[in-house]
Each structure stands twice: as structure tokens, then as C-alpha cells.
Length: 425
Ligand code: NIG
Ligand code: FE
Image (cartoon, rainbow, N blue to C red):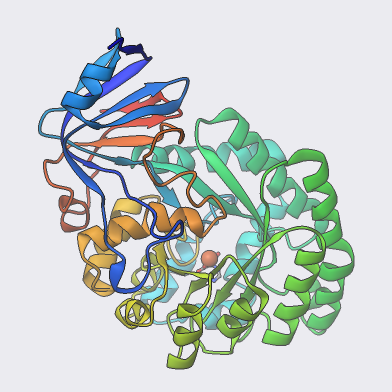
């Protein structure tokens, strides 16, 4: 039998975790946790895609390459997928952090005009080049920690010009960096100070001007999926306002997401299921009824354990109850300057094992195959199979459970995006 020439062969992996789909969809309920392990595994890569995957014997007899990587004793997984970040912003909120540790609450700071609106002031004052320059090292760190696909939200402009500037920053960073970015319009992140006394007037602006402008921006600049998101919360947007915003997003051809139950249970998760949103995110205060609804739906539940941790809170998403109800759960960093400045999905997995009580296998599913379904890229990224993009991480560990178990450092040895090494240590 003739063997096929490829660009790269990675072989002898102690554990190759392929992270399979289940029933062509995300892994859910009690079946969530299949890492699809191949021992002594190998991957053949050609033209940025996976040409073959199997045991080293199988791959080395079917393919040959001038470039081979022997990964004896190491673990290989898909590149991690971070399905919820606010990675584009200007400035910082270190002073607010000090006030919070001294006892001020996140909602108090928000009510005083700080919080999100403090980053809005700094972001409005920044030009496009500054936004790109400040976001780039964060995205770089994400990549160094094994993330190869990142969802990025706007939401620190809260007026058309700056919101579009944030989308432009995302498009520039996507083009300049090896990472794949998935943009989300979050003009409904907070009520901007100009509309403090009339939030519904801001909702009108969102629905009548900003969302249509984003639809036009997408038609001109972004062939891929672009989401519309809303912060449904006490002090931000009500369920009724959220419904108007998401329906306008759908009209403009955008995918739907929601921030719900971060602090209070308002009914945003029910709304997400009703509208067929791709994901509902945060889900700390979610009640039994809405957990059951999620379990019956295709809406992915994105838990953000770095956020309660970052706020010094002690309540996390009820992931075990969600699995009991058959929910497809994913995790993300929520990287943002207010509640969770964390670029590492490894750290999100470490928190998910302890506070969501997921096994390392479940946490890895939530950070790969299921995370991809939370951003409309299900079955394309976050899983290793023939024909998929060659996005993978070689880890400096000999048992995948060390992801989740160990924390505080970086266990990624080599990060490969579309078949190219983009980080090595
Ligand atoms: O996901 N909840 C709203 N948005 C962010 C916080 C953003 C900020 O404080 O700047 C979150 O926690
Ligand atoms: Fe968020």
C-alpha cells in the first residue's frame, strides 16, 4: 500500500483526546465526559487540516512526512475554545478592584456609574489602534495557554461609533493573529450615562440604529457568524428589554446569546430557550425550572467560574443539576477588566473541577467540543477528526486529568493552529 505524503505527523502521544461529538451534537447530561482517548495516538496534518488520526502504528503506515514530532509521554487535545470573553477594552479597573476587596459590591460600583461604564469611558477615549494594541497581548496569552478559538464581545462603546470600532478591532486582530475570533455585539451591556434616566430610549437606539448598523457592518466585513448578546440583569436590562434587543438581533441576521442569572434570576434563561439562543451564559442564580428547560433545548449553558472567583463570591453555576437535567454545558473565561481578568482556559478548568464539581474529563469537554457549540462552530473546532482544522495542543503532561488537577502555571508545550506551530515552550 502506498503511503500518503503530509506536512506533519505528530506521533506516540501517551493520550490523544479526540473529544468526539455525541449524536452529531454537543455532549450532554450524564453522557458528558467522553474524551475519545486513543493511547499511543498520532495525527497526520496536511494543508492545515487533519488528514489522518488513529494509533501511531496506523498513522505511520498510512502517511509519511519530512516533519515529524515525537510526543512520547505527552498528551494531545484539540485547541481549547473560549466561548465567552470581553477581551477588547482600554484601561483597567485596578482601583475598583481594591474597593471591592474592601467590601464594595459589583452592583454598587455599577450604580455609582463605575463598573462597566468606567471601562466605557476609557474605551470611548481610545482610537482603533489603541484598542488593537491593548487587546493583542491578552489574546496572545490566551493562545499561549492553549486557546485557538475565542469569542470576543463588544460592549464598552455603548454608542454606534465605538461599538463598530470594537468590531473593527476584532476583525483586525482576527486577520493579524493566528487565532480565530468570533465577534459578538453586546451594545446591551449597560445603560450608558446619557440614558441613565430613560433606559428604554437607549433600547430604542439599540433596536432602531445600532443593531441595523451592526447588520450592515457584518454584510460588508464579516462573512462568518456574528452574535447579538444582552446583559439581562437587575441594573442592566430587563427580560422585556432583552427580548426586544434579541428579536432585533435576529432580524438583522445575528446569532443570539444572553448573559442571564449572573446575580439575580429574572427569567433571561427562559427567554434564551424560547428564542432558540445559541447559548445562555453565567447561570449562577438559575432556578430548577429553567435548568429543566435548558435540558430540553439546544441552547448551550456556558458557565463562567472565573467570575464568581474573581468577585470573591461563593456561588457557582449548578453544573451537576444541569447534567442531571441533560443540559449541554460549556465553560469560558469571561475575560474582562471588571469581574474576571483571566486569559487561561486551564484556570477555568481548574475552577470547574472544584466549584462546578466536574471531572477533569467533563471540564475538558466543556472547554473544547461543547464550547464550540456555544459559538456556532460545533463539529468544526474543539474536536479532532479527519477533515477538521488542525488546531491542537501538545501538553507537558502524561495524563489528561492533570488539566483541571494542576493550576497556576501553563501546561501547554506546543500550540498548533491550522497546522502551524504558533507557540512553543
Ligand atoms: O460577564 N456581566 C457583564 N459583563 C461582564 C463584566 C464586564 C465588566 O465588568 O466589565 C461579565 O461578568
Ligand atoms: Fe460576560
